[in-house]
Image 1 (cartoon, rainbow, N blue to C red):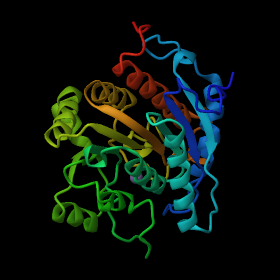
Image 2 (cartoon, protein in one colour; image 1 turned 135 degrees about the vertical axis):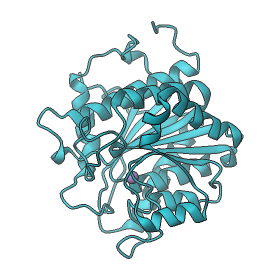
Image 3 (cartoon, rainbow, N blue to C red; image 1 turned 90 degrees about the vertical axis):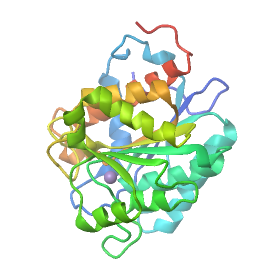
Image 4 (tube, rainbow, N blue to C red; image 1 turned 180 degrees about the vertical axis):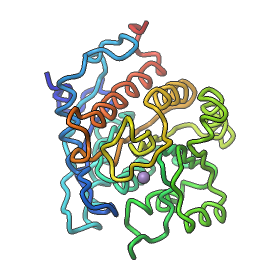
Length: 307
Ligand SMILES: [Mn+2]
């Protein structure tokens, strides 16, 4: 059974809309092919068990697969508009759907968050939580404002985002210009080491506190796979040691989801060609998607089947 082969049309009871953005032309690393990961992640779910770790039956998750956004590798401006249209059309069909995007490089996150901000009632109450080894705060990278290394900068520039509702966690490979931009704009980031220093429970409490202080109602979560340690997620362009374990990410997501409303999430920068032959990175990405959908559904009190 292909896990994401569960329908393509948004119905009255649809909670989650999975879609792919097969676009990796704004990465700075050669040999990455994250554009292939939406299709690969669909495929890998054929081999996953049909229950979550806590024993919830996955077919009870109400999701559909809306397919991939049409991407023209040579036309950045057009792709941004295509993504905007695609995401807005999902909300036009049902106001409370939760988009689940698989990239692509990290740049894909920017047009998705912009479209969500335009589609929800109160974008000023939207928080963005980014898991990433990097700050991605460059103003320009390789002479372009559009890059996977400028994505946090672009998100921060959105009129409904400020240093009060943007939080980056898992950092451990920050360039000097980014460090300066983070300081100047007072952007909060929790580096990866902090989790080991304070423990996962306290670390997660600090994340929740950050958003509570800013009076945030909804959160979008963007997961750059390189936030995880390359020993568990080697299939990505930047293999930086000292990242989160799968279990730490699982626990962070579980606790955050209990405390704040998640209105969408993504997983980006998974490069199948750099993965191990047993597809460990694709498996990690697929598991995170499934477990996070389940956490979100649990937080809404919809399911009664969890142990
Ligand atoms: Mn990134």
